[in-house]
Amino acid sequence: MRLQKNLKQDVLGKLLNIDQTTLSGYETKKRTVSFEMMERIAKECDFDIYFVNKKTKEYFTANDIKRKDV
Image (cartoon, rainbow, N blue to C red; front, side, top):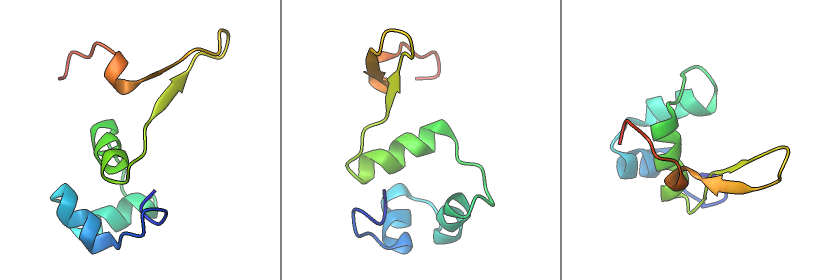
C-alpha cells in the first residue's frame, strides 16, 4: 500500500505517529501489526479493507462491524 501511494517509510511513519523502524518491522514481518494499525495504514494510503463472506460473496468493511473496542 505504501509503495503504491509513493510514500517513504519515514513519511508514512510520521503520518501514523510511529517510528520508521516500527513500520519497517511490519513490512519485513519482524513485527506483528495490529488490526487497528493496519486500518490506519490502509486509511493513510487510500485503501479500504474488505471482508468477504465465502458462501454468499457479500462484502463489508471494518466500519460495518459493531466493535467493542471502539
